[in-house]
Length: 374
Image 1 (tube, one colour):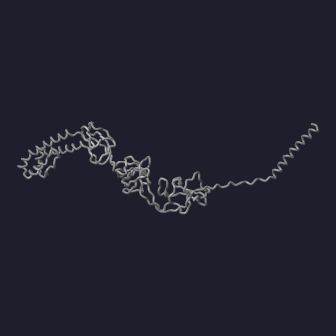
Image 2: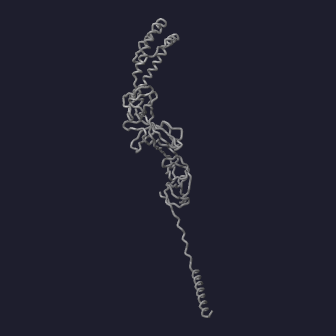
Image 3: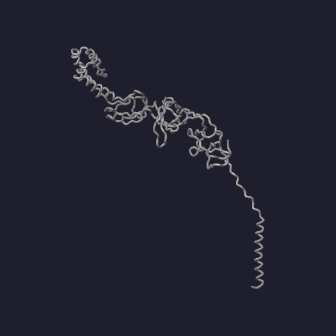
């Protein structure tokens, strides 16, 4: 290697070395910038101081209206169905005592009159023996005979206070025939079916002109005045109400109301809803008509709770935990729940004066710094 090339190489290495040491020296003289501390985020929450008092609450629950009396009408005799006092059609209304259905009964009526006539003759033929053998009984049996009218039901039998008279009327088949006719009289009444209450026809299975047989289902009727409301209620609410207490019932939009009474509480729990049914008695009136199947809202009277505070249910998490504020930071606390309503609940178990968060907090953590919105 010649001298010129050597000088060039050494000069280059010297320049590189000088540059490296200069940069190191200058970087050592530069001061590090100060590190910034992240500012703590403050969360704004709605809170209120705990203040216990004696409070009154009401239970409002919706339910459907049922008829207290819903009867299936069945035929007990056979015959052709005739028109009664009303048209036996679905939706037809009736009054108590109206003839709903009449079954052709002329044949049965004539047969009964024939049997009464035979019985009349049998009693008449026995009177002479009554007069000779039982003179003290003659007047009673004679009067019984006079009172027999084949158009009406048989009168009551004279008192059979003598064993000899009993034997006599039994051997003449007077007793057996009498009671057999009384049975036919009851059977004849079954050809006419009368309304047992004010109501309406909800189902018709056989029309006028059809032939009914014993046991045939003719239709279904309901009582439209004496009604009851079936209310499914949570177990925790049901324990506060008592049978016999007054209940105010509203229609769905709250424009009309009725006064009812709690008449019974079921003793079994619905496995699907974990509720029990309670029943409220109601009376339908012409000015404010009620209908079976109608949805109503029942308001049960005030329930007094002592030493409690009311907050929104949404402010409570994990069943019974809430956020309270201590030293301007969130802290979890457990409460004792006394009663739960649809949107609120009543509690105690914490010291009065503590600030409790009264709104639901999303992604909130303990020890978060907060500022209270009053």
